[in-house]
Image (cartoon, rainbow, N blue to C red; front, side, top):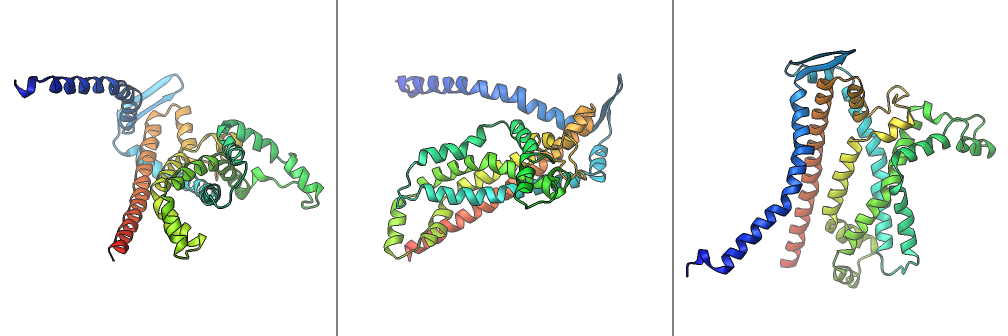
Length: 317
């Protein structure tokens, strides 16, 4: 019998065909709702295309003029605002999440009520960002309960205008992002630490290693892939920051436009129906996000590979 006509061969071909059928809906939806809009956005970024009253101007091809106008305007400042807000919120997020993850996964502590604490720290992630922003707007307003409490305690003689100062506004936005996401980051890092072979810790403890040495020499190198994932997803979310600063500053990004993010700037062009400039902003944001994510991935994966080589070298020696 010919091998091509054997039952085993026919069965494998049939299974392969069904595999393509099952994955086809994903690719169809991706092409219609993601790939085509993205290509359309890049295409219109090279055109003058906007609405002026009831009149539509364009589309007229103008090359890189939209991009040139963006960088001559305040786009670099808005990019700097976005990165500053993300960094201020992410640094305490990753530090506290690492500490909590190491604490919850430490078998020698025998912590009670871990399920309760995990639920509590994850709950802010379930609250809508808009609701969170409205809550903080009420709490930290000039006549809000925070100012009232500080004045009652004698720490302030007059209300501190949190939303009228650059430090206060950026601090509140970063603090909200930290509260909303540190629980999710903690759960991810806990899963990563629990995947580390316990025998490594036992061997290190027998050799006299301290808890700090085990954390920095075993835990951190082995969970670096998950940390890279956390950093990349957090960076993408940070560059797309919109709802919290938009609601907290009532869409103005004040004071001094210090809380205006890239997506808020993009939203202004979409609201004014300037599709060409909006496409240029989206394209620039996509390229910046791609470059930064590749940079983070290369750094983290490079460190992970070097750590693996060092461990292998130590074993051979």
